[in-house]
Each structure stands twice: as structure tokens, then as C-alpha cells.
Image 1 (tube, rainbow, N blue to C red):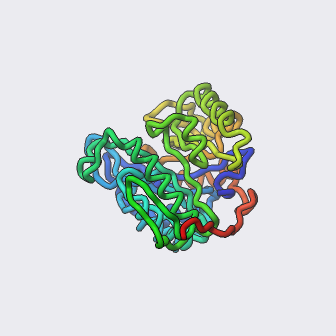
Image 2: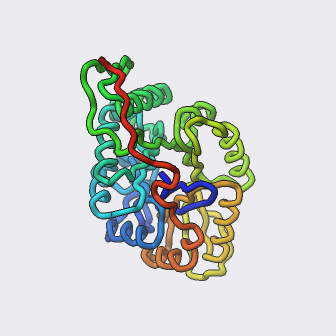
Image 3: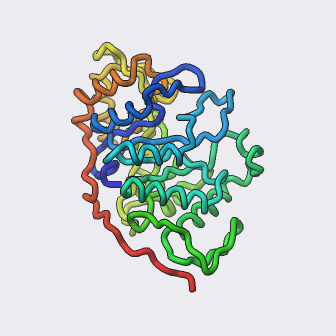
Length: 323
């Protein structure tokens, strides 16, 4: 967590796929090479999407590949970049499957996983999985509780609407005692519940003053929390123009802008307390390899990754709660 969120300053992450494309489906040409390039360039994290079904009306298939399979590949093809999900749709997966997959990736990557979670925003997916769209908020809470229990305890006794466990255990456990869980958006939950039950918040790109108010509210709710520092991240679509002096122009959930103004915008976001800017390149009109090189030379040195372990990450024993 410390590489992505050192605290007190902003880092930069990238959301897969790392390419600009029209329509809902990316080409995925050179997708692993782009992530490796981002790691070398100084991106703190890379975030994969959970989009089980293509909804043409929604217009975005994410990186197409299953997030857990893809993270297994990235665990083997990268060395230090933080690997995150943005985000796993908890109501559509049984929490035991999510916990098994998350802990496996965490172990294979050497403790690099951050788990972004969501309730799901594509109504067409729920009937396909036999799930009630109206019950997703409650199922999300139940799933997260189950997930926490089976990963943070040995041989836990679980009594949940989603299942019962007694006298058995889930392996592997995370490298560290717990996998950080970050909420995406509101998820139909009260903000205080999010502050109390997650380790951070992934949000969108509202106007600067509104974002500043969001962050101040988040700090008020998490200040003095026994769980320690809880980061606030912002996802932004970026079309970095070839003209470095181009002024910012609003696009869907982000900006088309030259690097000079973009650097000024990033400093403003850092000043209000954004802990990581998560860049989505879908609307990029330039080759993303070229954009990453420009960011590496002129922007990323101002927002370097944190040092792993700097916030006291260490291996701790997992508790046993069952018989």
C-alpha cells in the first residue's frame, strides 16, 4: 500500500487497458508492454477492471480479460508496481471465490495487491448471474464481511446469508495480515459506513471545490481511526495533447490538456489532498506509449511512488477464531 499511497503527497496510477480506442472494445495490442513501460516510467500502480459482460449501451469492456487471470499474468511480468482492482463487483461473486483469488494474487505478486470493490453499475449483469439488482447494496456488505473474516482468521466460524463455515479454512492467506480494500464511488452506502469498513476511497473527477469538500469530509470521518491512514484516490480520463501548452478542455470524466496545464492541475489536486491520480487513457488520441514517455520525462518525477514498507507494512500472524 505504501508504494501507491505514501501519505502527504500524490502518486500516479494507470487504469487498464493502457490504450486509446473508439467503441467499447480495445485492441489490446502490446498491452503487457505498456504496463511494463508504465512501471519503468514511475507509475505507482496499475488497476484492472471487472467487466464480466459486454453491455453495448454502456460502451466499455474494460481490459476484456478476467481480472484475476490478468493479475496472475501481471504478477509474473512486473516486479514492483502495485496491482489493483478498480473494481471487483462483489455482489456478483461469492466472497470465498473473491478471497481465494485475491490472496493468491497477493502471494504470487509478493504482497502487491490492493482490492478496489464496487456494488456494480451495469444492471444487465445482475439477472445474468441470477442476482437481484435491488439487493446489491446489502449483498455487497455481506460479501465484504465474509471476505474479511475468511482472510484475516484461521479456521473461522462463519454464519452468513451467503454461507456457513466451521472446522475448515481458506488458503492462502495474504502476505500481510490483510488485503487493503478500497471502496469505489458510493456503492449505495453511507459515507460513514465506507469510512468505518474500508481502507480507502476511489472516486471520480468532480469540480475541484467539490472534490476538496469530499476529501475534507473523508478526512473528518477517518481522522483518529484505529486503522490508520486511509487514502483518497481520483480516477480521471486523460487525452494529453501534442501541444504542451494546450489549455484544459473537459471530456467525459476527464480532460484533454497539454502537459503544462496538466501538471498545474495535478498540483492543485495534490494540494486538496488527492492521494493518487488514476489515469484512464481510453480517450487518448495519441499513442499511449508516446504519452507515457512524455509523462515520464516531465510529470511523473514530481509525483514518485512511495517506498514499500514505509508505512510499517509487515507480516503479522493471522488470528484463529474457530475451534
